[in-house]
Image (tube, rainbow, N blue to C red; front, side, top):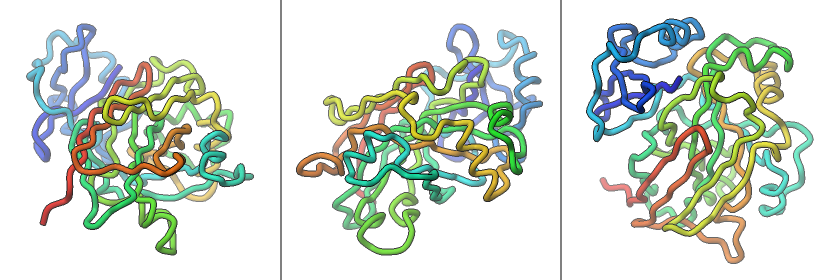
Length: 282
């Protein structure tokens, strides 16, 4: 099953995709997808519906982020060996954890805004995991049973803020629109092996990133277990699990995003995103 939200920003309606790819309004069952409402029980209730009897939403309408908001927006750094190599960083001995501001969340096709004066904004296609059940010291063998679903994430990053301005990586990861998520959350029954998913990202029609989740240093189950030993994860929390090689920072010389650039990215089976880069106004 695929969960998505349809409509103008701030007025999205929760939906599921039917077998023909039509978005069906489920606001009669749940007011919205948020940390207060998402759960494994909700997935069971939605799965029992006859989608053909639900109202269809306009096919050309905007797709918003699949969650109204997130709780924790946890990210993992340098989690692909080949990406670590392209940045000149050593292979981590333990997962590198940082956060993105929850309000960096954006729709999958919304514009990505460059921060004022930014010269080093970069792209990162990633597999995101949405938590559906409370995780508190979860054992690795049980971790995947706590997953609500999986989604595409673009962990947009301002490299100067991240690496050259001191402090924590969160500074370069948290600007508005730096967390495009979706187009939908795909439930685990449609993702039998999260460690065998192809990822891609193109910039202006040219290939930039190509990878597969099997080359992660730390797999999804390990990451959930590991993070839950430092913080309690709740339904609606998101872990974005690292990026494969091909980021702009890794090129020689580095290449960064500028206003007018376009990104197309996706994960096979989880959908695609398309974003235009714009300068932030005001």
